Length: 364
Image 1 (tube, one colour):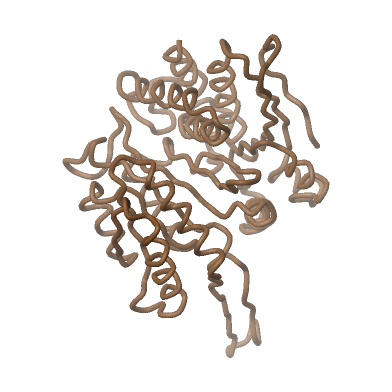
Image 2 (cartoon, helix red, strand yellow):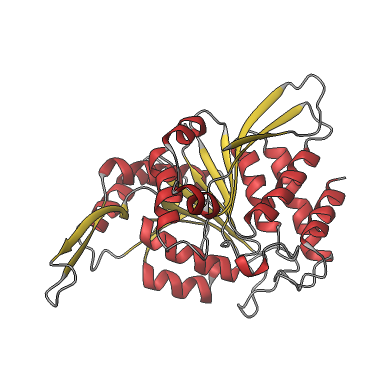
């Protein structure tokens, strides 16, 4: 079921963005509501209109109807300017059903082939890394998002017997790898340091990651202004902890990207501040807080909304509103640096709603 949500009236809006809102499960609706409030406040003095369209995809809908992502809804999502996602995950739904039926299907059907994850430590935010601060933790992970082990190629032989065989194949195409690598080089070129690291496992995955290495090296010749290097994924995890300042942009495959971005979330202060985007640079992209649905906090007004707010800022930058996105990020940084006691749910010193209020106040 779709419901259209209204934003504060904007007289003679010069630009209107049609945004699909998927609040999802657990605390997802709570944080997305606060993210919408911040975005609407950021545009309150501009001639920009956010046209919000609500979709009830998630665990509750699945339990009532057996539907995950109907074809009719997918057709409507293709016509949106972006998707703003809360969280998908319900304790009464078997793991994998919602993730594959909604999240992975959206990524694959909408060809969101880039997962973009800023890893940035904000002022006032605690990190488990000793003697590291915001000046040492500021990099981006570019993860290939539609191939690799997540392509779903594989199967069982003699399932349920003592001779059972399970196969899961990592799919890596030149097309998929090259467009991811090119995006990473373009992303790196826009940053001050201009350093791009390829993360792989060429000494063991001698076919798939040979393709990644060769493609990376060939594309690098077109970007002489970008410094490049390579690290095995296990070493990458080690150096992210020991010397995170070594990294500027990291490009990697789907599985390794999934792993190192969670590590990145921890060193930037936890899931309460981590945001990401699933991008189709020429199509419909989706933005979300990285943390899960956190059902134990549902309805208590204690969950941290900053990751959802930061995801909203990423969405605005992607839509061509970088100044508004930067204003939101600066407001978040002021709040983390001067207001919050912690990023943890129930320990912030403020409620979910009040944290959003603080960000709105900083926006002026």
